Image 1: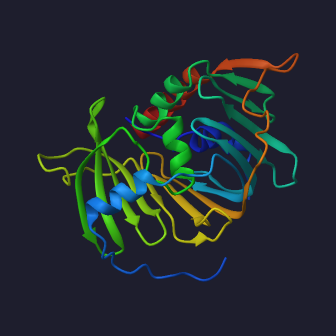
Image 2: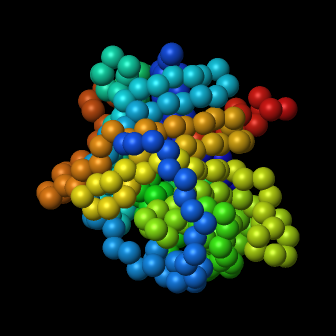
Length: 282
């Protein structure tokens, strides 16, 4: 079952014990565009290849409530680097994927978490619904899962609602509300299928909301992103300060263990976290 927001939630799972203590809101008008045309426009839009984002990260949930500064670099289609700082501005966590491996370094316990198979890591935390390329889409407010089938598309209050399904993950759906005016997603849920109709969904295991957008040199990008993880009782809030287009792709998407570091398997660590959580719920 999907449990965590990909990569960012992996990061939170590793660093939660170490965390402590542009413009106003805009009302999105009901979309007048044809639903099928709106979906095609989202699919056809060409995103910028390499972006750097800086943001404030807040995590709230059982026994943890804290905020810190963080930054990311993404290089499409499937490379991502995440740097999280302590409230004092020192490194707390580094995480990187080159599309193949997904590794992390946690300063708090001087441990290198090795994930040789990025897809296996993400499958552990999303049930296979979200891959690395999909994660980059979610972070930038785009419609993920290019290979998914559009099972339903209709105009709703706030935009165009689409239901996506993957043949490889038949038990889950992705529901998204699109804003055709700025080609950004406003709402995104991952939920189990709960009936014969595509719109019959069970309680979501992941929700993402985009309350505000900012203008950038490549068009609108998220200014705020709020993700809730009901199975864990966690909420992640990202408030972006800047989005910058990078002309040169930095060499930051691989991590190697430093001399003397403890090492742990990332998939096994996440499985242990899930077992601990399930045991605590009993």
